[in-house]
Length: 298
Image (cartoon, rainbow, N blue to C red; front, top):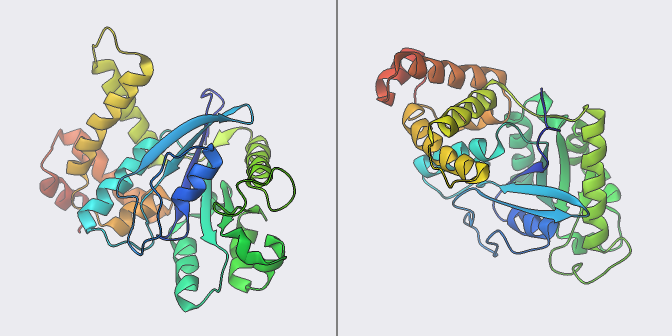
């Protein structure tokens, strides 16, 4: 684990499938329109976007991600955005927010829950909260009562230590008090995150891949010699450079392995780290050669 208290902001990564309201949730948390959001069967977030703002006295950085669990994007486009997600999250997220929607959970919705459980390493759940959208669909229920109706949803929430909240980006925006108020629900969500960070001794989630990426960002920042550039601008420039390099070095890795590495699946982390170390040690940029040496195939 890496301590996150050296960084002033809290980094929240949104995970979920297309159409469940990740982008709207990000906008609701930050109380401003940062992320593109509309009703669509295809992924609207075609690039990872981050936004930050002071909310209830805390600087919050929210990182939206492509629909990692179902999307109409091409494999290479998905890979690019997973890498961007890793870079934006570096040195590690303080909390993953698993975004699901209130509604009927048929076989297709349950498959998404199964994928989340499959792709996320156990340590992810120790740094996760479940956030339901479309709260208006509760029709008088609490979110806890809704979750109890589905053993799989209850299992997922239990894996996250019972951390579960609900918002409604359309109907609950104007209410200032009560259960049906985004203001109240976001405040409760941020308090849950703050308490969990205290329980984790202010340690963010990290793994070897995220650590290597952070080291590469720091190295690139040292190489940037722009006199009038602020540390924040230098970091943003370094992140762009690192993303281009990683796209080449990880060209032989499937999106499934890359997603698993980001989300802490041990075998996937080991595969990707092995590839990166081979590339760095050899100073090789031709990804095909290095991928073969590391034993990772597309």
